[in-house]
Each structure stands twice: as C-alpha cells, then as structure tokens.
Amino acid sequence: MKNVLIIGSTGQIGSEFTMKLRSIIPNGQIVAGYIPAAPVKGELKESGPSEIVDITNAQQIADVVEKYDVDTIYNLAALLSAVAEAKPQLAWHIGIGGLCNVLEVAREKKCAVFTPSSIGSFGPSTPKDKTPQDTIQRPTTMYGVTKVSGELLSDYYFKRFGVDTRSVRFPGLISNVTLPGGGTTDYAVDIYYKAVQDGSFVCPIKAGTYMDMMYMPDALRAMYEIFEADPAKLKHRNSFNIASMSFDPEMIYAAIKRQMPSFTMTYDVDELRQGIAESWPNSLDDSCAREEWGWKPEYDLDTMTTDMLSVLKERYSK
Ligand code: SER
Image (tube, rainbow, N blue to C red; front, side):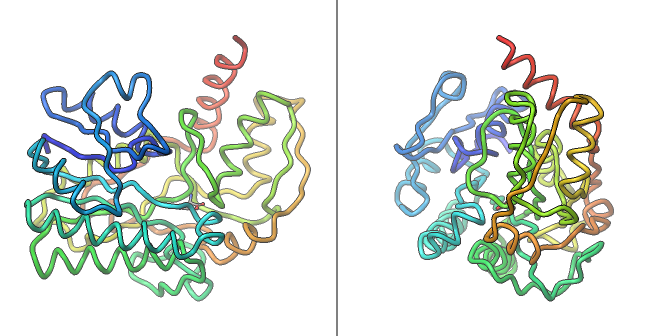
C-alpha cells in the first residue's frame, strides 16, 4: 500500500484514518476524497492531497485513481443506520451504486478495496450472543441490506476478477474527533460529550440493550492491519467479525460515573433506534479475525472511558 484514495475522508472514520495513513506511509500519496457538501479543512487539507470524489460518479473515481497511481481504495462513504431508514433509496444509491463504481474502477486499475461492513449486517434471526463469523444475515434495515449486499459483491469481485477486497464488520465506533451522524450506536459517543459538557445525559436506548462497541484507535488499526495479512492465510474476506467490548447503557453510565461521580442519566427511548438496536447482535465472536490475521483489540470500556473523558475535559475546559 503506497498511494491510497480515501472516499468519504471527511466522515467519522475517514477524517481520522486519512491522518493515520499519512503518518504511517509518509512517502505515499494519501488522497482525501470528499464531496463539496463536506469539504476538507484544517489539518486534513494541509497535510496531503485532496480531490472531489463523489462515490456515485465513477469517472471521478477513475480520474483520481489514474492521476495518483492509486493502489488501494478505502470506501468510507455511507449513510448510517437511522439516516438510511429515513432515506432508503439514497442509502442504496450510495452504498451499492457507489460500491459498484469503486469495484469496477478497482478491477480496471488493479486496486485493492476496503469497504466496511457492520454489526448492522445481521438481523433478528441471527444468533444474538457471540454471533459466529458465518451465520444467518437477514437484516431488517436498509443499512443492513446494503452492508450484506456489499459483502457479497466484494467477495464476488475477489473470486471472479481477483480484486483484493478485504473488510471488517465494525461495531459501534466511539471517537472524540469527528462526531458521527445518525447511527444507532451513537448514543455511546454522545454520552461522553454530554457528561463533560452538561453533567447529565438523556439516553435514547433502553437499559439492557447490548451492542458491540469499539474505540476508534482499535478500528483504525484493524483497517490497516487487515491489508498486512498474508492473503494465503485468509479463509474469509468480506467481512470479518471484529470485537472489543459489548455493553448496555447502564454499563457505560456506570463506567463514566466511576470517574465522574456527579454524572446522571435518564431515559427517553427513541423507538426507531431502539427497534434497530434490538435487531442487532449483543456481541460478536471475532475468533476468525484473530486466527486469520492476528486481530487483537487494545481498549476495553474502562480504558476507553478514561481516554475519552480526559480528551474531552481538556478540550471543553478551554
Ligand atoms: N454505527 C453504525 C450505526 O449505528 C453501525 O455500524 O449505524
């Protein structure tokens, strides 16, 4: 991996991942692809090349791949689960129409491709605890439908055309850099901001609703390490279960309260998000990722909470 195009570089994952790749591949061209509605700014803009790349425009992708001699494409453009329920056609257009464009360019120009999947690729008929790598995937959200279809399409391009597609199923991602928008797991990001800014939080997800979550530094490492794997060892490709922690609102509340005793939480359940959360697994079994490419998380709920609170307290005390 040397010259990389990141589509969706100003989003929740892309903004941090672009900076990480620029630090670990200093002599490569790490191109920040963005759409005018979400422009590159600040450090992201100044630290390397950026280009307008709308994933629904195949020619734009092909032109940038050609211009920078791109060998790897990270496809990070997507609508998160609750937004995708409000705009299902757009979610399909970006998630699958966009992926078709990326895969076709990758086939012609011989690029590797990473397209994240999600815990959202599972549904109510999937085994809920320690969800196996290979199991029932019948999601009931448009977000999940695009994720399963994306997994299948990516595997198809590998088997049929030899495109080096690799991917992980992300849990809810928690970060202190770019705010997420419209995800079901995002309450677990908001809670830290509200704890630091207001000292209280109104939780939209019911107590007892467990979902897998992950701190962003672990997620970024997974996106890079999966491409360092020896392809001969990969029995799976699209996509690997990865996991680091599973909790419900009471557990994250308690973890914050241990460090901020005056913090309080009440509930006002959002039915759309609650329904989506209940259709997803409680926790994933990530043993295939551990065996096939050495995946191992570093953060747990307490170490993540310590880091989140210290970064946010520092930021908002100024
Ligand atoms: N974080 C995503 C969402 O909640 C799940 O992958 O939509």
